[in-house]
Image 1: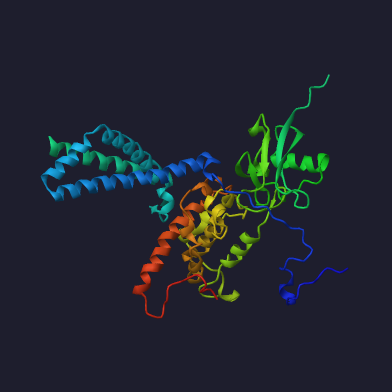
Image 2 (image 1 turned 45 degrees about the vertical axis):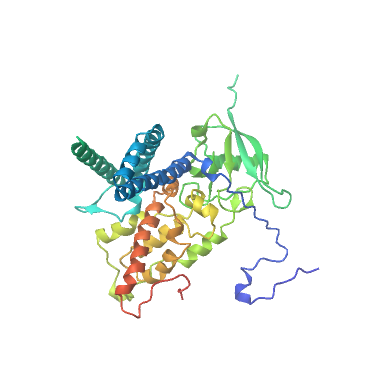
Length: 151
Length: 258
């Protein structure tokens, strides 16, 4: 018996799956894909630590809100900062922030247009190093200001 | 007395749609020499051990882009991956990740080819010239804008490295977006407006989350992650600058293409 021929215009017939095809493409599952390669773990930690960065912003915002509510609320917030739980949280958030900074500046050159200086292309590695240097410099300036103010 | 011939084990993920309900690993022992590539090991299997094994290959010198597969879990061209670097074995060989397996190491490329066709991967002259008018001239600075992205051999290793493509096969993906950028960044080309529809679509650059592994695995150092991510800036500009354009110029949207 002749296999059924699909009723389609001649020019597109070549693209149509014949009725007798034995094609049965197998799609592999994507479960826990980030565990397949260390590179994906590096990426996932970059994304997870972004939550830490946001969490610290919320923490600072809470301080600002307490400051708006008056002296008692402010002192309560500062008092909470001194608790062991808060110190532990700050330790974890500092590590998260450090990792996020490293991994973020690592990918930064890929997010920018190509840079040319004197007709030569600026390498991605140099952009990463400049970004990290700026982050370190900004942190040092901030530390100096805070220590200067609170002394 | 002759020295005992060295061998190496290969574990190959087999899938024969007519008999297997799902892929399964099969082990082969092949002769080992210092200069043997994984592709040569597969060819040895096909020629001398098991003729039913299916895989794609052509040039054997990393230019045709046919022989991409997962080797020990990494997307690689099997012709330029050498057994000597994978000792002592076994070497695990699997079809390119994130693509449906058609048979053994052969994957379905239909979706990729369709996306590739959709971006007009050729120069659409800004101002058509006749032969008498001569060639299209370009300065070295203009060449530098697209040259790094022009080395793509369509091997699809970047797709096997992209979890976002694995999770959403509709994502245009690193290779095609890099090629799209190669033409958009070419000073001779005039089809940018039409290609921006692909860039701006949800399946365009915004489906990329900057994992960056595509650029790591690219055998031609095309850096697709860079091409895709700098087009997020272009897409954002395209979106916001529409208010500064004359009223007739509507923003590029998916489906606007002729």
